[in-house]
Image (cartoon, rainbow, N blue to C red; front, top):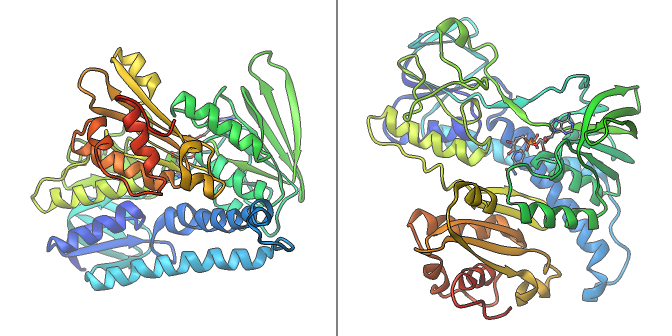
Length: 462
Ligand code: NAI
């Protein structure tokens, strides 16, 4: 039996980051992971492989649509799907090995296998029981199932199966217009697949700013993605090579079917804690099936903490990372803090979509007086030079104090641009603070400054 100050269960972005911070704070640390490689869903079958495919197919799109206009003549590249898969795998491998290196560097023990918690202070992996003064559950999430839809990961697939299809499908039906559905839909649309997204609600990307939802959908339609909105998928029927999707339109209850070579089920994820034994331990849960925690990520059982997708909040890698660092501080007897009001969200389509803080709809509902500063990328010289004039930056600020309340960006590099607004919000900045900050020319970030200027006396290039 080995004993530790802290054992972390799960090596996704929440778990591995927490392990590194625990070790940096001088705690004897182990991390249990049952997969062959570290990094959890994000590195193995989520964020990272999907970004590799998004990058490769974006390059193809550029070659097909923009090269000739820049004077780069010749045939567009053809797709070698096996090589694209190998590139994706190589991206995964270098990242997962990187975490292994960081574990060694920080003297973190990787306990290989699946963990159970027989009692507080003990973690069982295989036949071995390890002692731990503190246990942090960071076991993440798994795709949620949909009644009437049976996943086989070949024809009817989740976000895992869709990354490793053995060929590019001719027709793809995506169930759910959330982040996963739209990122993956983009990948295959660029590869020439006929992509149809079936969405229950009347708008895509639930919870996002309404203006962004509308504009984003328009841009995706221009890229060839079809949408069937207000439609609840009832069932799928799959053979060895094809599938039929049945959906009902909400407005008139009429039933329709779609044929597909592959169906992606992207209707959300659910917290994953199978096999941990938390029922027997009496760990309290929320009504929505998440592990309940207090302000210090402590569960109802002393000495057991939980972070990331298994607890409340957006299921985002970076939210889990922040919680991972903060809980490490708590376990080490210091003060951990996460500002849940400033957690950005990014969709890695082209153009990218990013947001932080309040939406206009949320502010209206809260009765808060606000002002809007908006700037289109059409007024940004750098964006125009690279065929990226679609989209805008929108900053929401308090009407009286000018304090920034939120930002919404569709456009080139939106996922990076959003962070200057995040930093500004962390410092309680006003829109004027952003507007008075010199921004290098020519950069996309000038569009953020212009939106901030538009909250005051007006943008210059609009
Ligand atoms: P989601 O919750 O974002 O979207 C699911 C969509 O499916 C919703 O719009 C919902 O109305 C729709 N839906 C549900 N049942 C349906 C039915 N029967 N018929 C038609 N439509 C139906 O879920 P998604 O995209 O699966 O993502 C899961 C989680 O992973 C999210 O929390 C997301 O934030 C996270 N994620 C984040 C990424 C990023 O930050 N770039 C990338 C991938 C995932």
